[in-house]
Amino acid sequence: MIFICYQKCTTCKKAQKWLDDNGFTYELRDIKENNPTRDEIKKWQGINGMPLKKFFNTSGLLYRSLGLKDKLGSMSEDKQLDLLASDGMLVKRPILVDGNIVLVGFRESDWEAHLK
Image (spheres, rainbow, N blue to C red):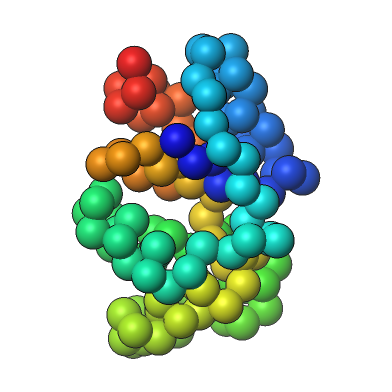
């Protein structure tokens, strides 16, 4: 199990606490220092079936400064993948990868349903 997060993010801290409290073991990966690659994101999208735009951290400063809210709709999937792979701060977090399970963002009920 790989837990990809940003250590300063409060949602990531909540997710990590939930994993710890429920006895899960995982490899911790800092999204800022070790950004997901284009291939990883494409693979994870294929596993969880979410639209690629759901992988974007829409509340992030970088997302806003690039004006992506208005640009994503007309952007090709290839361009979106390139953008996500360019900077970890554009990627929604946390991401939990465990075999054929990929969870993006932390919603306790979803994590509980998929992991317990």
